[in-house]
Image (cartoon, rainbow, N blue to C red; front, side):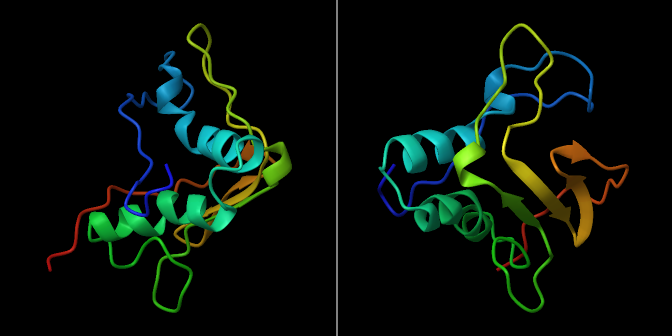
Length: 131
């Protein structure tokens, strides 16, 4: 986890929102990394963890307008309470969203407020940019 080239990803499935019971690996890797490697384990700094969740994957997949907060980038921003972040997904019930999320902006549009989804669906399939 401490190697600077280590990104975080998942190999789970994503069902339509609110349908099915996908495995925890579909909903849990990102909050789990923050909880176990930053808060509980002191393996990574918050900056290292956030980079491995955002900027590094954007670089690997050549998503030029993602993974950083800067002029010209898409406004994908997650605001969270680090002390409260935890994965709550299980194998037996539809996974609730992770605890600790305060606000999420997707393409600059508010998609989650105080842990509750809004009606905004601003996401779309991302395609890698040509070199």
